[in-house]
Length: 550
Image (cartoon, rainbow, N blue to C red):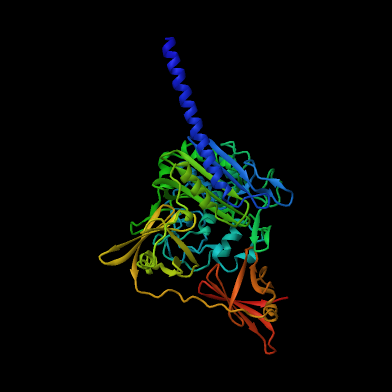
């Protein structure tokens, strides 16, 4: 027995040392990766947590929760989580269904009797999986003009309810914040409680999520991380947004530790049954039977071959991403207090590292000659009429989706190319003598077929003298309370819209400018005396005039 006990002690000691070594190795890998990101005492924060089997195995706070008061980030800090709120809204709907108070196949007019459905049948299911065809109010040109205005749910619904339908319900998938506003109102109608009270009572209190809140700009919230935006001049406080507007689509505030409690409750079927959860996480279908990756509050994908259920969020001053890997029982969540950067890429890379399958880096790219690269040059058409152009310049391949920006892609093999970050890639191949491309993002792959179409013409920018650039300076009112500010400095011209980052704009001729960061153009208009009196913003097929007000 003594010998057996000694052997068991040795085995247990070995296992403990091995587990410690693995944990230490993961810590070192994550620290190395995170040290490569731009979080410092001069930057906003990242709060990151990695959990295995329901327990945190790595958590950290990097950067500053409050730049002005020099408060360093810690896991206790509270962030706005944006659209991860949709998980809470979807689960609340499913809870009410299990209580027999509604059915996801009910028409929404059963609960919002005066909603104008424009002779269409719109169900709760359509709201949950973004297939309703209702116009998303955050995409409407006047959204910024109401950003500071407190509204009741019914007042907010009035903003978009009479907009034309974008498609017949169930025929297409288009991410839509309006749908989740309607879901929040349905929760109130059915439960007899405000949305804020419902999630506080039935979710936060039940799960001991003591650092989670229905968001407020006036309530005193302990350990609130302040929100920031980034400009060419550095960071600034994010523009004010009344949190009555994101409502059930994006108003929750939380910490990484509380979100682990949330994920653990979801995994344990504490709030909803396994069958309800399966409907929420496993994607859904269009009327044609075509699969879409979005279910009810979760997007289905994979990372390096491992299945994921995830959601991200973006709101004035904050961004977020939470990823659950069911087969490995791992959860990775990242929260930032800046609406800049890409926290989704960070959490995805952290997940890959935790899986032991890190993404390749652009620094690992191999060298290919011009002939090898040139065989992939051309246009590729994907489902939905999306066209991406592959071009070659100075022995570097670029990818450009029509209407978007031109981005470098880097060869990992002769046929596999990655974007910066490694989690979005192309695999090129030839089928029946024709160019083909697999485009993979978020673990979802779509096929593109080579077509004959010239790439968008590369714009030739010109330099204008400082005395001309200064003529454009001023504020231009696009909508009430939505201003585009034009500023010249250092022989360059910049534009900044209310609540958005600052972008440089580039001249093609006098009074004609374009943006490289987004697909947009600006034309400055002069009066009969030659003075600039207005501008016209051309974006997304719209031409929007803005009068110069100062």
